[in-house]
Image (tube, rainbow, N blue to C red; front, side, top):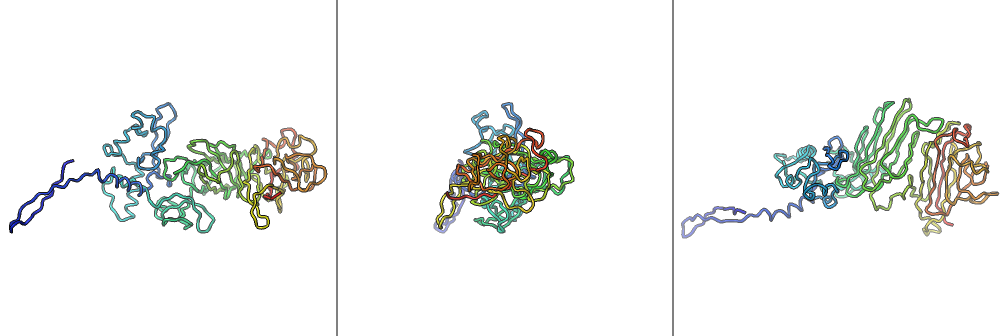
Amino acid sequence: MKPIAFSSQKVIDGCRVQQQQTTRFDIRKMLLPLIVLSVLIELPTNSAFNQSELVRIPRHNYYGAEPSLYYTNFNPFRPYWLNRPHYLDNFGGGGMLDPIQGRSRLSSRLGLTPVRDELEEEISSRLLGKAGMKQGNTQGNSFFSMRNPLATYEPCGSSNGEEDGICLAGPVCSFYGGRATGGNCRRATTCCVNEVSKCGALVTLNNTYWQAPAAVSSESTCGLTVKMDRTLIEQRVTTCQLRLDFISFSISQPNAQSVCNVDSLQIAGTINKVPIICGDNDGQHMYLTLPHAAASAQLVFTFGTSTAARTWRIKIAMLPCGSDYLAPNECLQYFTTAIGSVMTFNWKDVATGTSTRQLANQDYYICFRTELVNKQSSAQVATVLCVQECQTSAAKAFSISGTDMARSQTLDDTSCNNDFLLFPGGTSHPTVGTVRPRDRFCGTVFAQESESGSTQTICSTVKPFRMFYRTNGDETITATVDSASTGNQGFCLAFEHRLT
């Protein structure tokens, strides 16, 4: 490297003498501090918080697959570089080509071919403007490709305890359109609640709320895509499951055959079976198990011709692999309290007469985490799970494939062929009368005793605690035909963990 010369004057014996000093300045000595600084200071250039400003560029797949989407602002100093997607190693030159238009990655990062996308320019100009700084010529400047050091993206709860969000610095939360709610965040961050209220939205942030648009038209669809991508700074770990919490949910009811033929919600991109649902589902939840290296999951509402009000507010939580709050495999619902209630989708405590609220093709597992229970002030692991009908004011608490009003399943073994609730190892407690050893329940009274008019508490010691709920595709077509006079509603059951 060429030395840099500096001139100075020195006085010798009363005379000024011109003296030249040479100082060797090596920029390589500054490389390590710059690398450390680029890791510590991180502006959210690769975030998809505000999807209206997300820049995506289609890339041709050289192996014949459909075109896919990748992002322009990769940074080799970020943690994901060591876990970069496999396609970076599949291009010529041992991963030296950028998957976007096949351009050289190293040349763009070393300044030979500076590349800067629109989102990066927008973030730099806005953040620098708020900080009272001039952006100037920042083309190719790595200082403006760094992320915010106060953006942790950790899940959090709001101050009022009613909403969840992620931890972000207040200005960053506002910049992305979120709502600061205080909460339990550290490092001068706030619990930022993110909401989307449009169809076709792309979600990448944990604890995002999907709110129904102000107006929903008949004969239309409204969908949302949840994108999983570890190269995004808001997703630093792999997501294995999604949890959907239906804060509110109301669309059209099923028809007389229990089919959601007008309005419906369908979910795609999971490996566990997720049924089509409709009707009223306030307070319900679902766990969606994702395939390995999943890229996305889709939620799609389909609306037919109806005058029914259509509203929903759904919280979408991303659950990382290895966390202790994942649901067991194949479980659509998972309950983690010692006492509570479980309801089928569209069950509601309202008087409906003989109209059906039970939904067709509901084949899924309902699982219960084994809880600690107190006995003489000493917590012990529960050994029994007991369930019984909920206390209701208007609706029937249990009504599955019944043939008679106010009666449990009949003596006939085919009485629970179409629709039933399976509770493995379930037996009545205490035992009343002559009881057949069965753990499949149907009818309009929850009891193990056949043709009983009195409800019973059913307990099981079989672990893991779980149920299986199954309905066929109709109410009055498939033999054995259900009675149209019963008005199948599904069920609401109260559960409790106990000791033997």
